[in-house]
Every structure is written in structure tokens, then in C-alpha cells.
Image (cartoon, rainbow, N blue to C red; front, side, top):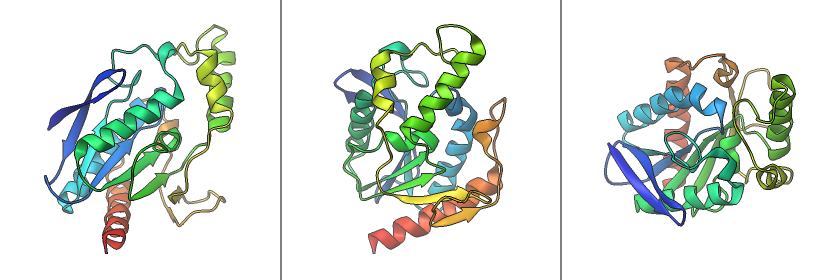
Length: 212
């Protein structure tokens, strides 16, 4: 179902999945190009959660997806505020599902818990953006025009504490690791239904344990 939410900067679209009652999992896609590469994958996770009886939502955030706001106008603080308003709009006990730099966006929301897959810090994202800019030899960052204020925010941005899941082979701390490929590295959007089902199982079990 296509819904919407309002935040101080305007109105954005939000996809809803699953039952109308009970806890809801609010997804935060990675920023910029990684969002388009992982959107179908995240939708598959949310549909799998719906099959497991858990509601989900995927909000478009300012300057991302179908949002009318240009990327050069975004601020990390505003992305966090928008995610918080999307969470409140569901009217339910909410849990975050964030992938990569999406883990930087759920810090202002009232949440019962956070679940992060391969989370990326602000400095890590900043290094990647500068690499893209160097490769393009232009003023944009992989096709995105970004403000100095936004880039400065990233320098000290880090994910909030969460249940962290990583891919096999990643040596960083994690609650669990799963086999699979980093879809955000693909040149084109891709999906992995088997990995999505495995992650949906983990999220569903985690939400139920949190709910008691």
C-alpha cells in the first residue's frame, strides 16, 4: 500500500506492508546510489516480514527516491527528523531496519529497537563520496550535488547501538553473520531472495523476542 507522511519540510511517500496491527519495522535505505541498488532487496525483506506476520514500512526520505527535494538541499539532521516523523506516522511500536548508511538515519526516532545490516559510519560514507568525486573529476559526488554543510555533518556521524548483522568474512563485531554478496557494490540494482528470507527470519525472531 502506498501511504505518505508529513515532516516539517513537506510530504513524502511511504510504502506499507503486512498487517495493520502489531509492531512495525521501518526501513532506512542507504543513501544515494546504494539506495537504488538495494531497494528491491529491502522490499523483498519487508514482504517476507509481512508473510511472517510483521508489518513494515519503507519511507522515501528527503532528497532520496521519488522525493522532490534536490540532493544539494539535504542535511543529515533533516533526514533523521523525516525518518522520525515517518516512524511516528505508523502509530505503532516501531523497530528500525537499516542497511549501510541508512544506519545513520534512525537516531532521532522513538524506537523499540534498531537492526542494522552492514552499517556504515559517516566518515566511511564521506570517504566513499570523495572517492566518487575524484573519479568523476567534477563537482558532484557520483551524480549527486551535495552541500558542504551535509558533508561536514557526516564527519562525526555514527550509528546508534543496534543488533548488527554482517556478511560472512567481515571481521567487525556482529551479533550474527550471513552468507551473501554485497548488493550495494553491484553496478546495477539486484536482488537476493534467499538472503532476504534469511534476514527476515532474523528480524522476525528479534522483534518477537523484544516484544516478549
